[in-house]
Amino acid sequence: MAKLTEQQLDIIQQGGDQKINAVAGSGKTTTVIAYAKRLPKGARVLYLAFNRSVRQDAKLKFAKANIPHVKVETAHSLAFSYVVRGSAYRLKQGDYAGHELVKMLRLSSTGDPLSEYIIANHVLRFAAYFCNSAALKIRELDYRLIVQDRDSLAFVQEHYDMIEQKTREFLALMNAGKIEITHDFYLKKFQLQAPQLPYEYILFDEGQDASPAMLDVFLKQSAIKLIVGDTHQQIYRWRHAVNSLEQVKFEKKQLSISFRFGPSIAALASEVISWKSHIKGIAPRFQMQGVAKPADIKTKAVIARTNLGLLLKAIEYVTESKQLSKIHFEGNIHSYTYADDGSSLFDVLNLHNRRRDLIRSPLIKQMKNEEELEDYIKKTEDVQLKMMLEIVNEYGNEIPVILKQLKDKHVDAAEKEEADVIFSTVHRAKGMEYDMVSLVDDFITEDKVKRLSMDHSDNELMLAGINEEINLLYVAITRAKHRLYVPDELLPADFPRGGAVIPLQPKKEEELTTPSSHEKKKGSYQPWLPADDRRLEYLFQRGVAMQDLADELGRTKGAIYSRLKKLDLVKSKEASQ
Image (cartoon, rainbow, N blue to C red; front, side):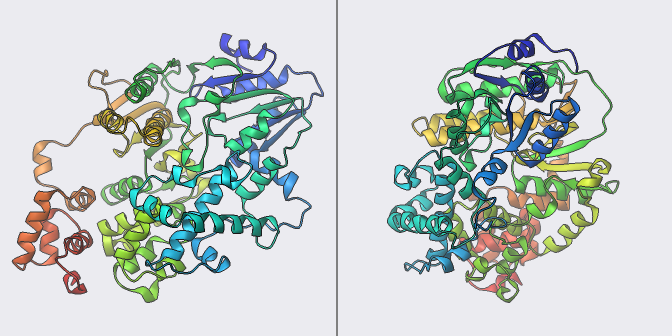
């Protein structure tokens, strides 16, 4: 084992409960293994990993360190052994889809289009909210507090009693074993059983993303407890995770030296964390020292904030680089083209083209047109379907050809190291590291942090969201080991250019005035300004053809058609000809 730092030795030699705030790449696992190694032989030790892959990696590391007395589990594998194994429960493969709940709970329309499917979507979200919470009963929670979109909240307010009642029915059916249970459900049942685990020491990794349910189980144990994580890597608020490092009242320790990257990347990461001062007016206490030395570049990755941003960048790479022969998407390429309910990008495309006979998704098949999909998205806050609709509006019928290009070059996880470029969103890159990283320009900027923090200073939910957006950028930056390419607008004005951090400069003015065909397509993702609408209306009313409108405005035909419908300039499919 490598020589330990003074911070690591302080943790290892300390007795009693501890919480360790560890910056990215600071050797958390090394520290935890060293801590476990000094414990008495035969001590009953539980190590809780964040997910299955981390669990497998930890098992190998504990075995290699000759520490056989550590039991390695995830929160779900532990709960499964207590609740599901040996029971009559049947486990659902994946999550329930809205159309399944419509049938199962006998939901019917309340008069609005697709209202039964919208209610089903909120029932699923309410059930997940309860299952991940520490609450003992549903009535202890107010689901409305986590609904942000105005249209969605208005719908929930109107139908709240029904949504709550149907959530109870859904959970009761699982509890009685009448339907298959979900992973969220058996974790909740585990927490409600208030188990006392047979361990003397519990080591909880990635604690910043613990659900309140699992944190409740952890804190009620009589064992000596150690929780490790990074306050600024909390990026699963949408899964109801809580930053337990801020809630747990254990003795606090730090791991502030990163062995992953050098001082330049560490300085940028620290600068980004300082943006949090715009939210609460107080700069967070944050120390990070990067000590890694430069090395050869072997793995190259592109990281985006969103699925949409990543797909747009991947399309750009594949269509413009003839040298690119192998690519890899973290989490598999299919996960970027399917929503949780099984709806695919092709379903949305077929709806867009009014080819409802080709739609496979039970949900999308219920929709008469694209307007109903847009209304559903507004009332459910369905981010995945929103992303798919945006891609369809941008690329239209080019999508099958584009996806085929991506899939033809895609290699699976076994060949990942052979890929010329690895594409990933921040969430899928969590826990990963790459020699070289290039960031897509869909992350929050400091100017936007300032503006949003000022505009929503009295909205705690919004401020928490801004905080997490900063965390997402921090996580993306700290995936890089030796070289980091950053869009220029993300770099502070006085940040030193050069070294390991390289700005991605905007194109020269003459290049911007003569966009390539791809850049014209990319323009369709830009917001429509009033001047754009006036120009579109003027040209359309003078009979300019759809393709010529697309060329003139730097958009795809699909984006032009969609905008014409929004402006009530066209109501038939003749305009798409």
